[in-house]
Image 1: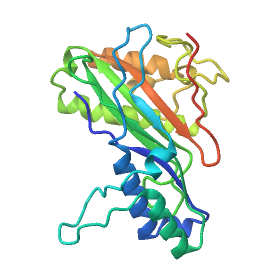
Image 2 (image 1 turned 120 degrees about the vertical axis):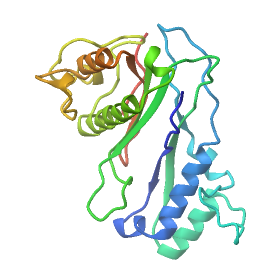
Image 3 (image 1 turned 45 degrees about the vertical axis):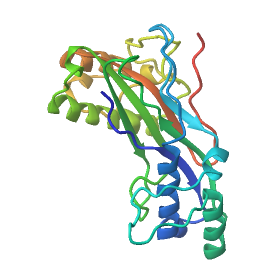
Length: 254
């Protein structure tokens, strides 16, 4: 089972005034909606070398594609334009530089190749006065739950997975890291490692469930949360972006 994921992108402008305008928000929504259609699911891999289903797209792919609006008006069929053309129009209107730097999408696996529940989660540090979902830094991650309980997940499991996922994304925004696990296929169930730049070794400060009582690492909480809910939970992939910087998460060494 796969929960419909949000796309993730970076559209830059020079002032917070422009990012609140309908033209900027429409461009962002259309570009991200378009990006959903540009992916190929990763091939099946072994458990020891899992492949992430969170894929980063080159900005040129989005810029040159015909924009698809998420909520088109049937009474006013849109004129076919690319993201690059709409950016040119927006720059002309606002007088500010506007750029699409990158986008990421979740490539849903097929039921024939992957089992379990895939659940995306997102969090952005949103300044006051800026529309929700916009901000920097921002993080998008995908949780992969496996076990009997994921075949027909209960409402409670879905609700608490959403809470866990948002807390993980918020942790990733609040505490910088360079990798999720210490190595490919690693479990990361160990205690907190002070000063670690590995996500699962950091003190999990943004989750208030009983599994986080005391000083527990992200990995310890994930393991305990999985035992509580009768599932195995793993972070399938993640991206943490800061305006003006590249992706902060690097592929782990095998």
